[in-house]
Length: 429
Image 1 (tube, helix red, strand yellow):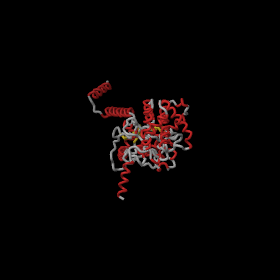
Image 2 (cartoon, one colour):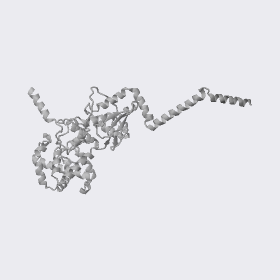
Image 3 (cartoon, helix red, strand yellow):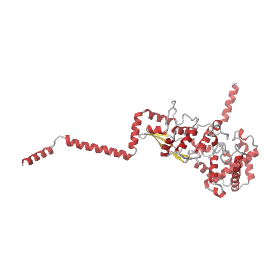
Image 4 (cartoon, helix red, strand yellow):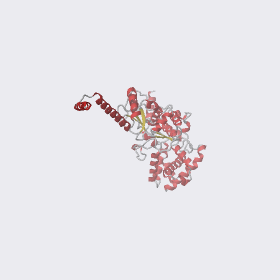
């Protein structure tokens, strides 16, 4: 029995890493009735998991068309490229869970990865240069394919893309296109230098890692043993806490601040575009973090959970829109609220994430009289001009009261006696 436990510990050390292998979505998410559709490709299958399914057969022609253009521009023959991939096939196979590739021999797997890798790189290059029309590729196909690129089950090893780029005569141009494509699709987060795909610091199992790693920015978290509650946007507003847009786009750039003691609190949130791609991107990144062989801090999961706690209904979304935190390209505010409420279901975030923010909010709540004063200041003196006008009015009232007092109650002076005698002489005369 002891031997079994020791072997299990050794296996755990071997299997858990900073980068998971390419695998299927964990059953806890895949079996959810509302989430299943977000894990299946809509147009094109990439990699071995969905390869060969009948509904993606039409997209195979699309991939071959892109792969052909890549090969022609690479200055190499298809046979030469295929041989290079075959020589690396064992290393590439290791990037997948064994279950995923067990039905593929080395030759078939190498050909599959070659076509998909060439197609992906050519797609990215065309997207950056906006040249899809040259190949008569329709706009809707471009949009759906881009969504499919970021599905967990639709991945190829980044090492494959790196190999193909190095073999092409246009390697420098391709690398620039890949970097720009990643940056363009990071409207949910900002990349940090350590996640640069060209840094070569760590081989990536799949290109999705470059999308998720943007949340891995350095954190400054305070450990606190007490759980702190927090409210939705409407309740925060009622207590004198208002949301504002953060300067940086990183998902971890969430903060609580106050200018002065009696001023309202401000919850700073990074800006986020909400559109048709939001649900599949977030859910696949959450699934990525939940891979059993992946050691991570659940940065995306924690962010979605935090945002879900702020959004209960359409009025909360409206406040976030007014603060320019959310740009709603999805539809109504009700749809956005429903989206985050669905995505946030059954998530298990890192409880230490944003704990400092929650603690600051809770301390603000505990001082009820401060919230009243803060809300009064926010409603009446949110602008410096209104505050100056108020002070000016107070000064005018003070001067008016002073003048009245001097007129009624001031003691008689030499001038008053002179005027009184002068008036008496006038009456006698």
